[in-house]
Amino acid sequence: MNFLPIIQQNAPISMQIVRGFRSSAALSSVQSGRYKITPKRDRPLTYEMANPPHFIAHRKAWNSWNTSNLRGELRTAQCITEDMFIRKFMTGTWHSLVLSEVIIKRQFNHIRIAALIKQGISARKMYFLLGYTEEMLSYWLQCPVTLELQTVADPKDVIFKYI
Amino acid sequence: MNILQKINSIIPASSKRIFSQNYLRLFSSTITQPQTIGENEIAVPQKDKLYSRLEIELKGIEPEVMRSYAWYAQKSAEHLGIKIGRCYAARKSEKDRWTVLKSVHVHAKHLVSYEARTYYRFMNFHNLTQSTLETFLEYIQRNLPEGTAMKATKIEIQPLPEHIVKSIEENAK
Image (tube, rainbow over all chains, first blue to last red; front, top):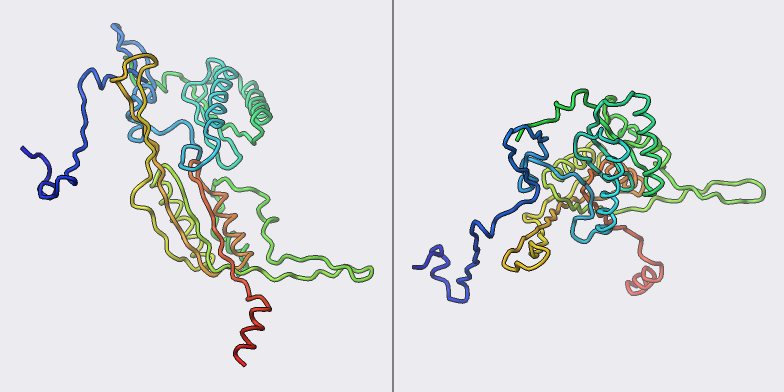
């Protein structure tokens, strides 16, 4: 039985190209970015964690915004390593205060870092950490760096569901 | 109306766009080169270059973001009185695909495919002077969203060289 559409069935054999696709339960098993259900159902997940990676561009957006992923653009590897460093630095400097993923946006030379921060320390200390982070990162990355932080009073506000 | 006044009238007072405070000093209507005659410096204004076309190519990952940016660019060109040419988007994106092994060691039957898409958009603007082009391009580029790349091609009109003009005149005689 020829399963091709009618237009293609009448074509010469060289044009009856069939693209194969094979899939089974074992072949399509993925584990990345997924969290296991706990017996007590008390593990908190944020919206980002609750949506696995196949929902990027559907229910989620990316965490890093730059032009290095486009065809013919430069500095892919450097952008990636810089982003990894920025994320580690943010979680380290604002220790146990960062509640969301760190979002990094680059416009020309300018790096903008956004995150949700818990109100765990006084405002004065927050301002110091803000200036410190911006200053140190701009010296290391040799670019102007701006932090655009939003604080959350109750950490339970970022929890989307319990698993 | 002066081009600077036009830009100021477009931007609403409550706008929160990222915009440098020093943009005014970059926009000059004429380029002057000082010429010293004796002790006095006399500023000799140089003529603006003329451009027949400014072509802007946009590359991005999100077509909706680029569509909105193109609308913004065309609207600001309309307000500034710049002639807008053909503006269009490529129907399909260019895709870079990699199919790699899923596992670090063994299991060659299990592969994973990754894809990176690049969407394209094009805009053309016609008959600009040097100062208009520089001003407009500066304004557009400062509001380029993250994750979008722009390539601006300027096509200049120049007068024919003297020796060619002479030979044409001689041939005409």
